[in-house]
Structure formats: structure tokens, C-alpha cells
Length: 496
Ligand code: NFE
Ligand code: MG
Image (tube, rainbow, N blue to C red; front, side):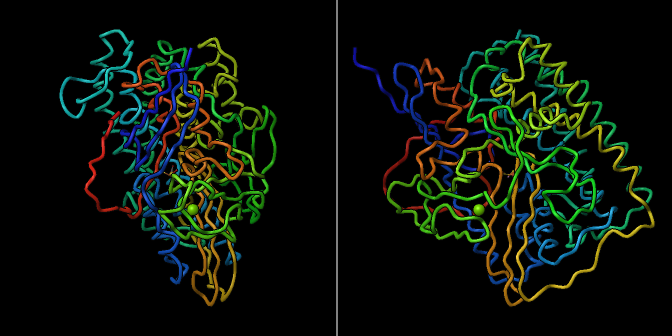
């Protein structure tokens, strides 16, 4: 019998950040080919060239309104690496607090305002309609509860934004990150007002967010066995715990490393390259970010995405909460995390391998949120009122620097090349570039593309399974210049 072959296009994918298009070939209900495309051009790397290096911290934050905090930190770390300085303990701690607050805000945003509506039917009123009809399995009583939590989650995000802004001046886009540390001097009221906001957030995570993820996980247990992806994980590690200048040796609360075939491996930043075979760029392929280029060509034959394909030693790697949590778990880096994850694996009657899945990503995200929120209190209490917050710097005439950090969505790297005291080159390799990357030079699909292969789509007119897999990665294709082609054709949109 001839196979029934259909191509499904979801463009734009809604309830994510930025502009993502998914094209999936379905043969006899199974997904056999996927192309994930970033349809928004990010021109920031060129905008930075020729400017004062200090501008990078402010401009690179504008990559995105959800994750300005990690961009400003990665950028300042790249500058510090180039200048040969490190922040004093107070500067390091205050950055960790801002990062923690931003991560908590981002995870709550992703679960309640982007992903949860994949699993529960919201009220029959905007913004909850129009919606697609999926297999909404929760008993009807949960509809009201989750709608209330959806609204409560906005208030919690406000608290998390405030927790960050107490130290950053404002959110989004922060004023206080500077090379060598931060520009805010701690006062007793910064500390006390941070603590009570954190307490409310911790209560919400413990009594609302975790139980809601567990409730959804219980009725969608099959999603622990769907959307595995590439099963290779990469993390640069979250929160600096000491002032070691070499980032690969620095102690981090969640470690730097990789997981390959369930074994832990180290990270050598020189193994990171970006392929552009499938990307609309004419710059050379498989270049390290220190030598990378960004030369757009929207007419490039065979290309289908504005995202490049970051690879580690040529291999495909997933980044994000799943990578951080499984790497920490496999490295026994944090006994509290291992106990927490074991408790929920037992609850769901699955092994750690089931974390490579749609529901595994949601579970990793909420457990990380708890772990980070619990850890922040100690960091806030360690801030010293009279101690320095920043090291002095001098802009060198010529230098290179690298900042490796974690954003909510995963491993984030900024690379700067300074010549004549100005930015000569700037490359950022962001989490969603890894996760939503297109096919690479060896034709290997990116992590999200791989996660969709083999998925069963019963109704090509309503491919909600593909949307659930995409959203489990919390993709963000953010913040740059649209490329528009004027023309008469009217595009057909499927909004999921
Ligand atoms: Ni725009 Fe971001 C995060 C970064 S993108 S949200 O988290 O860096 O992948
Ligand atoms: Mg880049």
C-alpha cells in the first residue's frame, strides 16, 4: 500500500517567544522529516561592531525581553575575560540574585502563560480563545483551578521582576551590570525587600507550580515517553560560587559539563562551532565563535532558517533545564536535587531516561525553579553592606574575551574581539540556537527537530502533538530585524 504523505506547516507557532515555523512530513501518521525555522533575522552581532566594548552589555540585553539578565551577565563576563578582571564576591552574589530572579520569572511564564494551555482548556473568552481542540484530559474541576493559577502566575512574575529590579534598577533591561561587577551598592532595604518577595515566590512554587506540573504529568504520563530528542546534553553551569578566572574551572552551583550516553563529560569551549549549511548566511561554516561571521543572504539555496546550527565537536546537543538538571543529577553535584528528582521519578514510576521527553522537560524546569529559589535566600544573606561591588577596568587596545553562562533556556555564550579599543567582532550563541537549530553540515537535524521525528500525528489538520513537543523546549527566537519580501501572495497561516 502506498504511504500517505502529508506536509504540515505551523507558521507561526504561537505561545512561544519569537517567530518559529515548523514543517513536518507525516507518513501514515508518523513524523518522518522535520524542518524547524527561525523566521526572524537577528542582526545584533553586526550592530555591535565598531562600538565601544562597554556598549555590548546594554545592547546585547536587547536581544530579548525575557532573558536580558543572562545576556548582560554573559556579555560582562566576556568583557571581564578580555580585560583580565573578576568581580568581587558582592558583585558575583548580586548578579546571581538577579539571574535567579529572572530564571524564576521565566520558568513561571513558560509553564503558565505559554505551555499549560496545551493541557487544560482555558475559559471560553479571549485571550483563551480561539484555541485548537486537543485531548484535554484533566477533570473539569481543574479548569477553574488552573485558570486561577494562570492569573496568579502574573502576580508572581511581577514579584520576580521586582526581585530582580531591586538590584538592577529596572526590568526588563537592566541598568546595574557593569564590567567587573555591579553598580548598585547594597542597602539593608534591598536585602529585606528581596527576602519577602522570595518567600512569596517559594510558597507559590511549592504549593502551586509543583503540584500543577505533577497533576498534568499524572494525566499525561505518555508524554514521559514522547519527544526524546538527541539525548546529548550540554550546560555551562549556573551561578558563580567563586572568583576563579578560568570559567571551565570555576565552581558553579549547577555544574558545567555534558551528558553523552548517560555519562558525564567535560566542556572544552574550543570545540564549539556553528554550521550554516541550512542557515541564510554566506559566512563560512563550522567556525568557532571567535572566528565566526554573520553575513545574511535570504536567497541562499538550500537554507531554511535564520538560526545557525551550534555543535560541540560536530555533535548535536540539547541545552536548558533538562541539561542542567540531568547533568547535576548524573554528577551528584547537589544531594538535594538528587533526592528531589528521585522523589518525583518514583512518583511517576519512571526512570531517569524518561526525563528525555516532553513531560521530563516540564518536570526539570519546575524542580530547577524550586532548587534555585531555595538557594537564593542564602545568597541574599551573604551580601555584605560595606564590601565593594565592582573591580576597576581599563579597556585594552586589543583583546579577546568569552563569557559562558546559563540563561533560563540553556547554555549561553558571548564572544568579543576588541581591536583599536572598539568591538571588531561579536558572536552570541544562544540557547534556542542550539535547541531549534536546523540540519547541520552533516545533515543531522537539530535537537527539537529530532524530538519530533517519529511522533504520531493522528490528524494533520490538528497537529497539537508537534506544538506540545516544540513548547517543551521553551523556544525563544527573539528580538531582531524582520526581513520582509513585498509581494502579492497571501500566506496561509495555521495558528496553534
Ligand atoms: Ni529570549 Fe534566552 C533564554 C537567552 S533564548 S529567552 O533563556 O540567552 O534562547
Ligand atoms: Mg549568533
